[in-house]
Image (tube, rainbow, N blue to C red; front, top):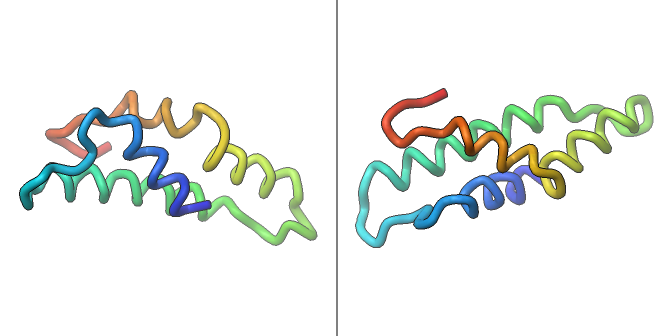
Length: 79
């Protein structure tokens, strides 16, 4: 789910990766991974917290939560 969330975050950019090696591509990737791994920290043992796990996984792979995170993204600073 973490990889999926990272890919979904990057998919909302017109050009998530530049053809040459530049820092903008690295910045966008690190921001995407930062958010995805932060969401992953909310995961727990599904045997004890099934609703929490289901909500987090759904936010990572299905809902518009990732898209809403990209609305706060800027290419010149970090959140």
